[in-house]
Image (tube, rainbow, N blue to C red; front, side, top):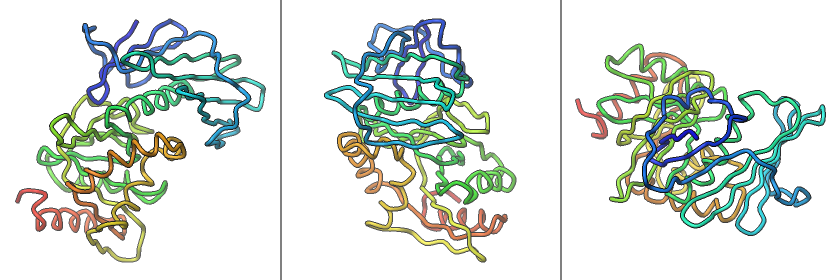
Length: 290
């Protein structure tokens, strides 16, 4: 049995069938007496395979979907060669129990992605949500760069790393934000960092969220109200937000986030001037120190 601590929540993975996945070693944790948020093990999945999914998609000739029945969520992955993978997660007692089973050939990435789904569902119950973004740490605070694929999130974080000394990358794909018990909001690194191997068991306060779009010149403005919601919500897991119960969890997390933290829109070129504009704006608005 392997135990990990991700965004402050303990999870356990049992069984040799699931390998040690890339990035997870950085989140290894000593066993404690407290019950983990999530237990993942390999055994036959008994969930109803015929139930109509509330979300479905396809990526690289592999179809996957999510369905819900009572207090259980079922994740299904199917390949064109007939291989399938099933994962079920349900609330039991003080935590979540999840099982994974598969037949055929699935690489580590498929299991890595499945664990992200399972952890993402469990974490929502503890006011913790994944944000699709690239995040840098500067002056002890995290700045989230959001946007659709190809808008330059990773490019913009690289500009920060190259132009502002002491900047560090926290995560390049799927960091988490968590509402702490005292009401404060923090950014957490995770084992899921996309194509950039950046696995840091670190958490920091958050300076700001900046949604990017490509443009012929650099402009920035702070968003309020529905515009701020519209900038942040699409970066939450779309599959989970497609379920009523899970979407309510997500909105309950975003509500205090939007009350306490600034959200900006940056229309920009992929150049150092764009990074400087964000820096100057956050400094002027006193979300960064001088």
